[in-house]
Amino acid sequence: MVQSKATTVAAYLKEADDTRRPVLAKFRKLARAALPDCDEVIDYGMPVYKRDGAMLTAFANQKGYVAFYAGQAAIAAHRADLAGIDCGKGCIRYKNLAKIDFGVVASLFAHIAKHKK
Image (cartoon, rainbow, N blue to C red; front, side):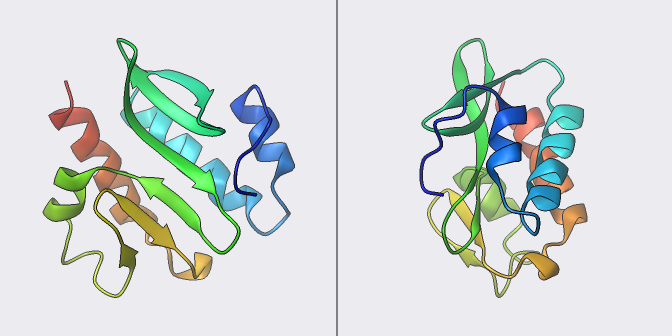
């Protein structure tokens, strides 16, 4: 899925196939735990977490990977933890879902919560 037509995050997760849905649900759970003061919305066709109308982070179910839009600062702070994972300027592309370290993902969300105020 490149861009979803879902209007809620719950509907977005329902669209995902059985192998991806648990991974996406885990991203959602970690985001909500780390960012309780943020609004959870669908924007740009994916789950987005906003504070005062500004996007802090997002994740997406892409065709060949799960994307996590963590931002440059969070990625830079976790560069060693992300060794061997495809990272762009502000995006992490998880191609092998079995190798996602959700401890690192939780730490990335914590970094976002702390530094994007």
